[in-house]
Length: 261
Image: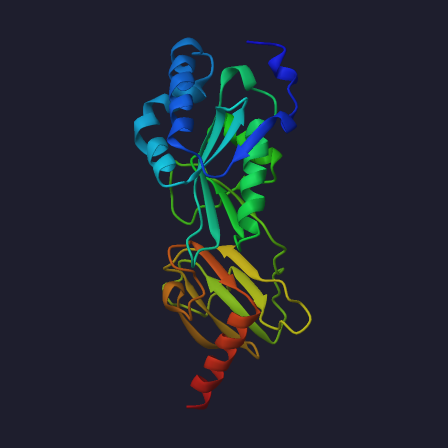
């Protein structure tokens, strides 16, 4: 590797948010070479996906690229949040061998998180992490995701905003039961106050669509149901509970109407 290039500061690289097929051509050339000549780096096995999801990412503009002297030397693919989504999912990151250990992978993740956070994204995930990406995730503040169903895939998650702490003493609470099969006599695994008058922090938590959720008022369950059908508390296509001040108000008003009927 070129030791002189290793000293190149980040300011000499250009982050491209709208990558072109010329960038894809650059990457295709060095990724093939890296796969064939740098077997010590398992990450270059991404070469097998070059004509698969990597090519699709370039076609659909779901990739950020770093250029050095006009040539693409690193890329990051991801699934950006849709209009009603709060989550970005990072798929793969890869850096040309001559530019390894310069912080480029970290820089691209941080840039993508900052870009989409300004556009309402609240959760970032690293999907199907290997040992190297696990270390990267830890350095970026990600934690291993607690899966609601058994899986061999390891993913990591980072909440991008301050969230509400659990509260089991509030008079009116939003609660979550896991595999209780509708038995709300059991102790909830999660519980939050729905009083947003002073604390404006949102509720964000990874849960299963089929879990039971509900409202406890005066220590009694006044309303419960399956999470995926409970007042839109789970954004479409998301495995996350999300309640902000506006949604909390809507839930409480709806429950009050239900209780008075």
